[in-house]
Structure formats: C-alpha cells, structure tokens
Image 1 (cartoon, helix red, strand yellow):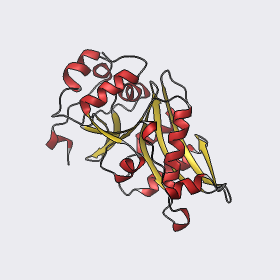
Image 2: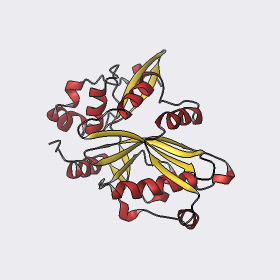
Image 3: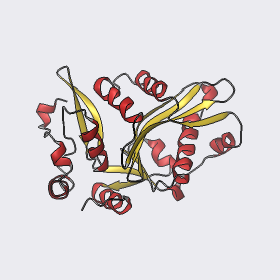
Image 4: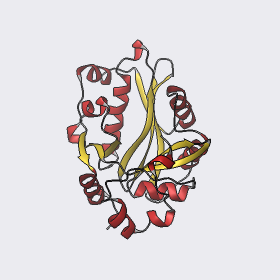
Length: 240
C-alpha cells in the first residue's frame, strides 16, 4: 500500500498541538486514520502521543516515514477487568521469573526487530526510541518492560510503550516461543498491568483490538469517539 494511493495527509507539529485542529478536523474525521511526517524529532513524537496518536513507520520508495495513526477502534484495559488464567496464576506463584522496567531497553528493541520480518521499529524510529528511553520529559515516559528467567537470566518476553498524562500505550513486544516458556508472554502482560496499576496509571491502551490475546487479557473495544472521551477524561491536561 503506497502513501500516494491512499492520499495520506501530511501532519506537522503545529497541527498536533492545535486543539482546534484536533477537535474539529482530526478526531471526528473517520475517513482518515493515518497521517505521515518526515519529522522524527522527540517534539512531534511526544506531541502525537499526548494527542492520542500511535506512531509507527512506513517505508515509501526507500524512504522511512513516520506514520501516526488515529485508530477507528481501540483495545482498552481497565484493571478491574484483568483476567488471569490458571496457567499464569500458577506461574505467578513460582519464583521462576523476574520483571524489570527499562533495564534492558536495547535488548528488548533488538528482540522485537528479530521477531518480525517487517518490523517498523527500525532506522530513525529505533534511534528515536533509544533517545526517548534515556531522557526525561514532562508528561511523557517511554520505557521497556522485561521478563527474565530467574534461573538463567535469559530475557523471555518484553515490550516497549509509554505513559503520557497517566495513560499507558503499548507499541510492540515479543516473547520466546519455546515450549519451556509457554504462557510467559501472557505472564509479562499480567505483571505489567499490575505494575501500571500500582504506579497509578489510569488505564492501558493496547491499540488495535483484533489480536485475540488482548480480549483474553480483559481489554474492551472502544470506538474512536468513546476512546477520545475516555482519553480526555483521564489525562491531566484536557485536549478541549
């Protein structure tokens, strides 16, 4: 799919920080999901995140572009809906695992890149992720979550995401497919949900709802209008 064929509009930092543009032209416009930019600066990435976009990348004719998406539907987890299956509950009672936060960012990033043939966390985007994970910003924190095998120190599962205005958004993750680590990917998600709740993060935005593991975890599907309303009601700075 080429950006030219879809006529994806260009978006600027000025657009993103203008509440009138967001509320009149972007949020209610259901005919457009994707926008594009060639700006990989921390400023526009953070502004996009704070406005509710999830930004990935697209290689267009050999040129890597930033592709912010305002989704049609979202998978959202409220912690009271978290589901813990029997296998994960058993793992939780064991001493086999160790959860860490932002202690192995580069290893998580490289594991994600190796897990997907068409990984979008590459090039300028990957460098931006590293930069964001190493620096502090107002109302924005990007970090990795790591789940290790306590017996041998091996990284088994992990993900990268960010908290902005007290809401966590997942970007991408990976897990070891070995039978030895069956259900460890789900274990990492459950532990992360518990960690986020303990940190006072209000809810978890898991992005696209079509993956079954998200509903299995307890996420509910919200349309864009309902998601934006929930987003505004739960963020520190209103987007109105």
